[in-house]
Amino acid sequence: MLNQIGLFGLLVLLIAWIIETIESIRTRQSRLPIYFIILSGLGSLFLAIENLMSLGDNTYTLLMSSITLLVIVQLLFLMQKGKKR
Image 1 (spheres, rainbow, N blue to C red):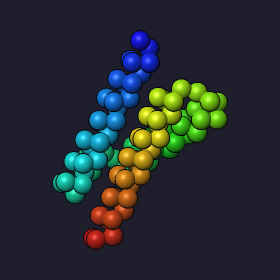
Image 2: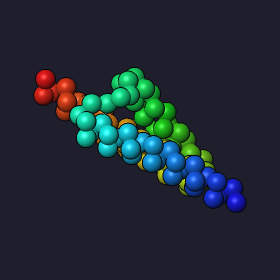
Image 3: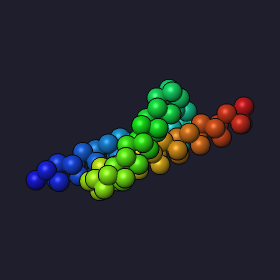
């Protein structure tokens, strides 16, 4: 039961980040402040690394790794947008 709750939480958070990333690419602007994106990415990365090193829950590692990847996509998009100006 707890694993199912964790998987549901994983899906909700991933869907939120996926929707925001798609919306940023579609509208060519991010609604999130750059400092939030960077801090969220760093936090997710360090939590994923810590969880991997402690051989923790795979659901949590997948969530943090996925959020880190989506943050990288957001940052790359913002960097590309900045170069075009």
